[in-house]
Length: 146
Image (cartoon, rainbow, N blue to C red; front, side, top):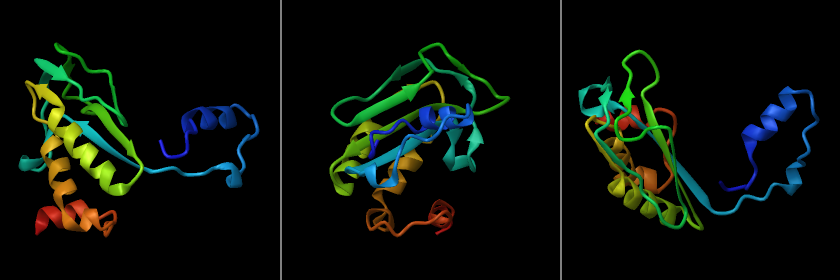
């Protein structure tokens, strides 16, 4: 989102033996992006999987908001493997704007019939340490413990 480069496409080409056609100096980041992976899990119950039928799903939209998903109303989230419902991605000029846009998009997202990780993402986005970019790979674990 911040570079305009399709990284997956580049990875596939390299895996097929093609040379990488990008030069580091040509990659210019623009703005800030945040991605929230929306899973059929219950964060309040130690992330217990929450398979089941999605009764209704309404994706958020607007400038700088992207929703990537395979799920539709009637889709059954299976209990046997990945519980990913979709990826919600925002891109804005500043970190503050990206956070605000993600909060709005998460509040607009409607997934009825199953529990999802949306409440956890809202909790993370409300955390002062997240706003100040004082996070690492143990941030969520520490946030939930404290």
